[in-house]
Length: 267
Image (cartoon, rainbow, N blue to C red; front, side, top):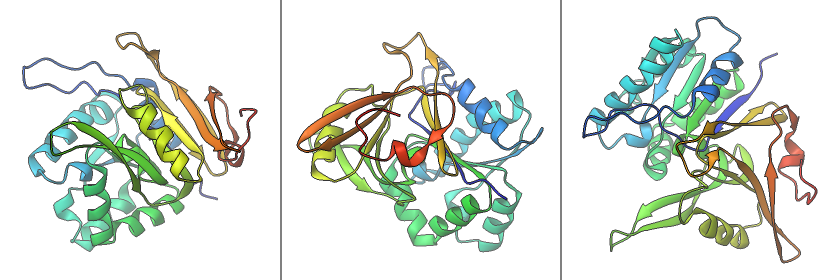
């Protein structure tokens, strides 16, 4: 029997090279190791998607080269990219999805990514891949898309960062926020939860929610270079007019239905 696996990463740097030539710190090593372990293969096939960056094929390729250094060069995976421009080629899409053990969507613009998937039917292909036992994972935009709705940032007409509630693929009936340790996320998430009758899962940078069938666990990386020092995950919701915020720190598997319930006692 195939397991249905999702790894949703709240955020983190991947060692990419910045415009000034400096490299960012690699934040998610433990999480990436867990993703590979979930395949139960010594040399898994890693398929990267940068569809949340589909406004630039050059950026898609650059993003892939960074991830290739991690999954191929560091962890010895076979590695490919399925670009946004490939999604109309149904034969290529089918071949690459069949080949993959890991399907990883990067961060970027959630709306652009979801619109592309719905336009090309890739959302249904990805859903089928999940049911076939592929390890479906992603970071930031690539993490939140599998839930009912998410907290997403955008720049308003005054070039000020704002936050909105975006409807997603609804594989799981919950609200989710990435980068929860960053400015503006807590207040906007609380507002969105008050407007919607959903349990919220709040992922900081350097944290991940791992779902395997009807069980879940969290991974929280050490990140001493950040203010938070270590990743964290919260479950938040409104019940009887009161707002609850419960820290989730179990690193072994527990009931997913319990996580997504309005249980005030934690998990």
